[in-house]
Length: 256
Length: 213
Image (tube, rainbow over all chains, first blue to last red; front, side, top):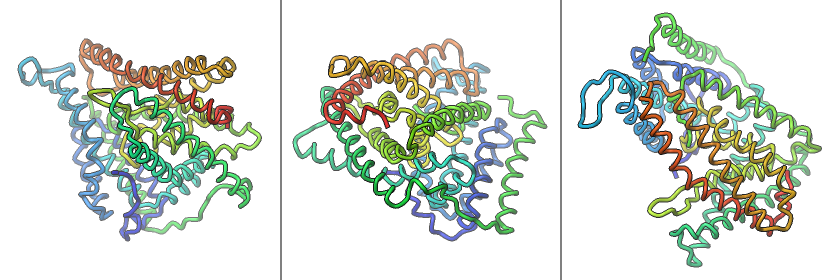
């Protein structure tokens, strides 16, 4: 299964060493500034920045491609739809279909924005241990109920998936073949059993946690130390983000 | 049915985050009114994990197969934890599977979370009719399962058709929305049947799960 593993979080690069709070804030601002860009002229800047950040993280390129493969399908499908079904100037005709200039512009914008944003997201989450990200969210004021839920979900999701795979294997060994719509009855019992198992397990976990003082525990805050380089790095990234947005607004670019 | 990064303008993404913030605030307020607010966290988290896992199950609809959204079921089982649970599920899907996105997390949470909250309220006000009656459980489960999908689909298409950057041809847009909405009717039907079967199963095997967290 092609999922987040955090196996590259242990590397030692500038991006990995970047103070987690500063990295989280800086890269999130960058991601949102990317989604603001509507001008084709600013796309090379976006590509350059995403590429530089990705190269600096030393994550394998093949890994990024694997992560991009499935969602790319939807974005490319949407892009093709936009090319043919937008309103605007016809560039040339392909039988009953007409290629529109505005559609092509929209497709390029959406595709590039998507790839740049996803590259930054993959870099952010693969260069920072997940628990650290939760601590960062908590220290930025996200309520502890939410961060606790994120932490527990992360802790148990692999266990629940393993439970599900075991139960599915047990069903197959007993002759179940998921081929017809009538199999929905067995599948509903499978999901029901999965929920019941999780529910019972959660009760045991809760009481075990209370015995270890969970009700008294407060936020999972952790002290982080800012270094000069972290501040410089964050300011640089934020300046780039603000710069791109300002250029677009000031020069009135981005009319698609 | 996730909106991916890069498609929506930033104002819409910000709007999605604002509505999600309000819905989360309301849910957390209701959770904090409980006697032991933290007691539900492990259950809601395991429930979230189970929902994420259950979305990996495919229902065969020859010649293809569909995966379940389980929005209605989340509303029934997780109550006020449903919206935070959906927000967290979407966060995990964006990080782990690259489904959806971080900039569109708020919008996606609105599309799926608000129907889940509605389903919770529908179940809360109708569950008194379900006592010991498989038939009534089935009817209510079907309605909630189908309503969850239908409202989500409607919200999704409103967002997509209103806010994508290029102005699509109006006629084509109407046709596309119409076709895609019709394509989701079988899913709403299947989800309704699945939710009703599950509700009957849970009522029989573990009724306390339906009594709330």
